[in-house]
Each structure stands twice: as C-alpha cells, then as structure tokens.
Image: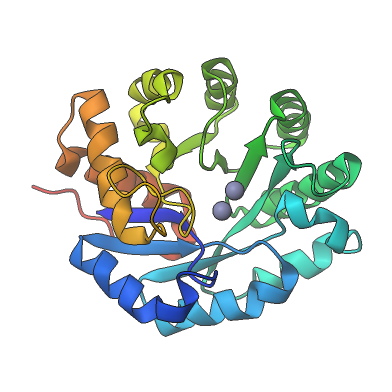
Length: 264
Ligand SMILES: [Zn+2]
Ligand SMILES: [Zn+2]
C-alpha cells in the first residue's frame, strides 16, 4: 500500500504530463496520491484533478510563502472548501523563515487559521516548517492546548529534538527524498527512530527527487525509492514499510475512506 502523501500534480513539470506521471507511478506500485495546494486560486484545479482519478485526493491551504497574498483569507472560506468529498486535508501551511517570502507575523496568523479549521473539521493539517522550529513548536503547543487536532510535519528536515517534540505532541512525520541524500546523516538517524505508527513517505514532487534520481524533475513514482531507502535504514522490508505507512495514511486521512485489509 504505497502512497505518495504529498505531491503537487498541478505544478509545472508534472501538470503538462499529469496522466503519464500518474501511470508511471501506478506502474511503480503507488496506490494513492495526495495532491497539495499552496494558493487559493489553485484550489479548484487541484480538487478537479482529484475528481478525475479515484486514487488522487486533494488538500486545500496556503503555503507560508504565499501568506502575504492571503491576509484576508478567513477560516470560513477555508472551511467551505473542505466540504468537497475529495478534500481530505488542510494545507500545506506553516512557517518558512529560510526564504521569508511572507511577513513572519502574517505566516503565523494564517497558520493559526488553518489550525482552527483542522480542529473544527477533524481533517489533518499538513505543516511545512523551515528554519522556524521554535515558533512552530510554540504555536503547535499552544494550539494543541486549546483542543487537539490531527497534524503532520511534511518533508521533515528539522532537528531530531524538534521531531521528538512533534511526536510527543501527537504529530506524524512524513519523509521526502531528502532523507536519501548523502549528507542527511542526522535525518537518517532520526528516520530510523520514528515510531512506526507515526511515519509517512512522500515525494513533494516536482521538487526534491530522491537518490538515484537527484537532479531530475521529481515525480510520484520515486516515492518507491524513498520508501526502499527508509526501509533499509529501519531494517525492514519495503513491503512491510509500505504496509505500515499505508495503514498510517488510511488512519490519519480517514476521509479518504481507503478500505484497509490487513494481509493474512
Ligand atoms: Zn512544503
Ligand atoms: Zn509541498
């Protein structure tokens, strides 16, 4: 049950050849795709893709890079977009202080809007965080204290200490192709230690192609390479890890309604 928990099928590089990209991924054993939005004007397109394919689902949200463009986006508009049956997640949202493309306070305010909608709808929050560990942890701790909500850190690249804190807060950790990079030793050590019920894999395609595809346009088929690499780090078979991460996906994204039967 190999699933790409985070891809951007409507982004340049994949959008022009979307059907072929999906076919190659299915041929590589990928059974499901979560197509992630980053701007409000993309939502309709991203949801439409999910309506065309039974194995594609959609998220709605605003990437922290785009926060400045969405200062007026209220919880009501975001909540209304989640009514669609193919929308199973909120995000990606969060904080990115590495690029600082948007004002930090605006990023934080919008992050909290997404959190409120995740809490209200019960849909998982997909969090992007870069060079913003302290504020991400502070906001999540404060907001979890007001009422729990399901959430994951996507494309996890932060410190093991931050990762441990996220696990304690109840979050799931999603690993991208970055974990396969030669210089990602600390991340690889952490990946081996993530509790098995808190782990997902993703591509973040069209970005961040894993080894041995590094430098190419990333596509969801490559999630199989990341899965194989993480399985070897953990001393598991790829089949076992695909089953574990597939089960985690089905449990976290319950609205997807994936029928899950444990292999006999
Ligand atoms: Zn991201
Ligand atoms: Zn992304």
